[in-house]
Length: 86
Image (cartoon, rainbow, N blue to C red; front, side, top):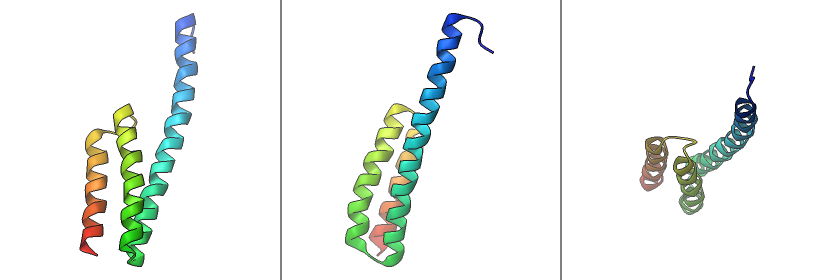
């Protein structure tokens, strides 16, 4: 349990950041799932437009340190490769 004023503030900030990061991660998972569903359905144009939004979200999370940069790059690369195979 936090005893000092600064550590109490840090605990409050950690809770807020955890909620924010969790919601952003969930949004990215949904965007990636939408791209994968479009790929499975064979809709290349729809998948490529959805990929752009997923790339933006992944890049933003990587920039803010919610996910690692290499993870974002790997996910976008694999999705792009799957779209190009269609």
